[in-house]
Amino acid sequence: MGAECSANDIPFFLELVGYEDGTDAKSLEYARKKPRIVQASTAEFTQSQCLVDVLKVEVPVNLAFVEGTRAFLGTKAYGRQEAMRLLRGAAEVATKPFIYLSGGVSNAEFVESLELAAETGVKFSGVLCGRATWKDGIPVYQKNGMEAFRLWLKEEGVRNILRVNQASRAATPWDGIYGVESAA
Image (cartoon, rainbow, N blue to C red; front, top):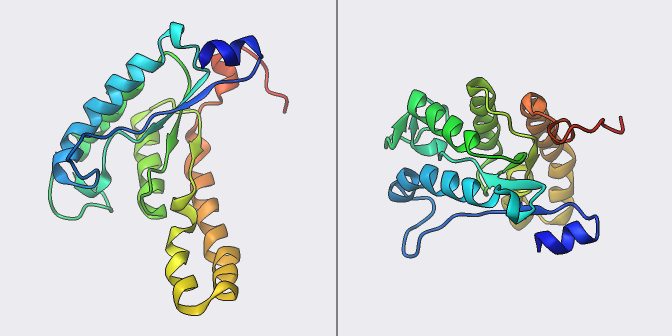
């Protein structure tokens, strides 16, 4: 895939989503393994022979299991300082720019993840999120129909995007990593 993109002068954005057979991705068991999975896949797929231009990765920690965060649900996989170390570790192995995926978490949790990455000094190059901006509107649609959902998107959906944009201000533009000037 990388060779085909390169031959056709098309940027190659590769999305990695980790999993382990038989393990719930939202479980404590997986939360403990996720940093290693994200770090190993990042190291593997940012090698030069893969020809990836920008890697799309999950945030390597699940904030629901990070004691000391707003998203913490009460069962600890790691503390805040350990989570920061794990964020740095996953970022340090990247030899190409990477962007964070929201991974289906809530908007509040994704924004907090980006804030923690920024506080840690991680040089991520942006985000790609969908569900984090609109999934909380689905119950509105189910209960009150399409017009209510449209109104929710115009109000809360827009606020969600603005929160992600604010948290993304810490991102490092990927074009500078490649030594080119931005069109802006």
